Amino acid sequence: MRRLIELSRFVVAVPAIASIIGAFILMAIGTWEIVLSFMKFLDTGVELKASVVSILTAIDTLLLATVLLVIGYGLYELFVDSNVNLPPWLEIRTLDDLKAKLIGVVVAIIAVVFLGELVDATEPNNVMLIGIGAGSIVLGLAAFTYATRK
Image (cartoon, rainbow, N blue to C red; front, side, top):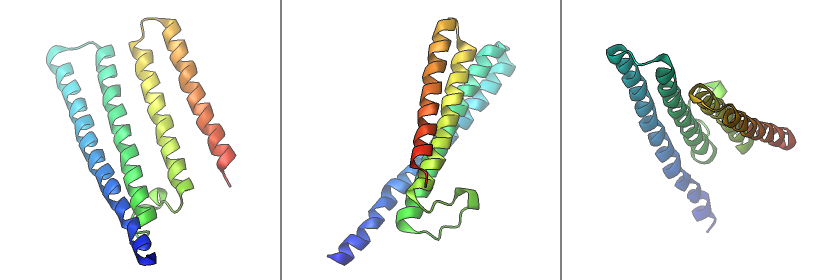
């Protein structure tokens, strides 16, 4: 029974690999969106504001891909093989390490989404409400990180 429980940790390899594959797919989509935005800008002379919004949307996709990649690497490194050859800044030894890296990427995604809303905004009150919401989430994540650090 003990051996079965020890081997069950390898089940986590499936979501880890699926997360990494999902990250590769989103990276391809985000890169393609940037290429399309650039081609559309060159061909039709789309206004700058529309180009900025489409590129920010693509960057948001790339940041989400980064989250999936970090989750995939982190799960694999924590449960399957702790000797994976990754750069030191991406090494994850505990769930707290994974949490900290994810919170950092989530804050970056929130910033990109807010910037996209700011650029595309037509109503100042909506931008203010979105900014307050985004700021609240970031403050909550900072408080959570502070409260759970060792």
